[in-house]
Image (tube, helix red, strand yellow):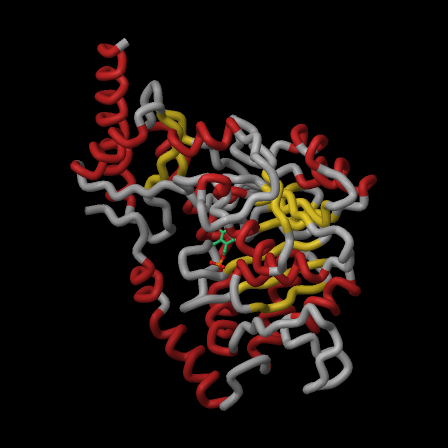
Length: 373
Ligand SMILES: *Cc1c(COP(=O)(O)O)cnc(C)c1O
């Protein structure tokens, strides 16, 4: 079976470096908010070209803290797309904000700025735009719509570390950017982790306070009532420092794998393109009218697949949406998307095997559908 992902391969390849990095932390006796964390924050900010990077405990926490950091208590709603895993919706709910859903573009699967108009009013605090599957959204266009209305822009970069446009990196173009270092992300920790990035010194200071109980001027005095506890520990920071320099090469390999799949895909199967620096190549997603059948056939040929994501936010009973969502594009795409294995340690032979299976089974599915028609 060709696995959908295999985190053990990167761990095995980096084992001695990881052992050393972990040993250095153990030797230091410093476990939280120490020198590794401080150095990682500086290195991440440098890598992204932003003024401030703040380590937190997860990508979802990063979203929540970004929402909390925006000082607009009268604005109690967040707008986001329904096809990005539900993380922004979870985060909004966790800090008591309502959610309105904005439909996505049928070609890019990204939040469609043309559909924001009817959703933005004086209640909206922020639009969360996700660089889904690694593809950078047109943040400048989202900012252009939001700024005159006093609405802030949060970029969810959990899938897009290292993606860049000429005007800047993912996370550097909105008011705040959020990252996840969940192990399967392009920069993964050996556990949970996340970061908030921003150029705004006031937002950075607020996140710094909020991530540690709302302490501001001194320890043990909560000054900011929106505070909570969300920290990135020294062991994870040390691992992330080791892996940050590997992100670009990993993204390159991921893009090449997706390019191979795109070449191999037969009629009726569209692999979303992932060429160029503005795509981090996080997930290899294809669109087909016969998703479940193709997935079953690929499985029978030894290729594992997944769906990112099967249920739009408004179809998840545990997520509370502010008003009935008008998101027909996202609903349709959710039934037609399928994700192929894509991680840097896939071997060339495995990529060849996925391509062969995709070409053969994709064509078989298409022929069967042709007969039905
Ligand atoms: C993984 C992910 C998150 C959440 O990150 P966690 O670290 O798992 O909390 C948020 N947004 C997107 C788009 C993600 O892919």
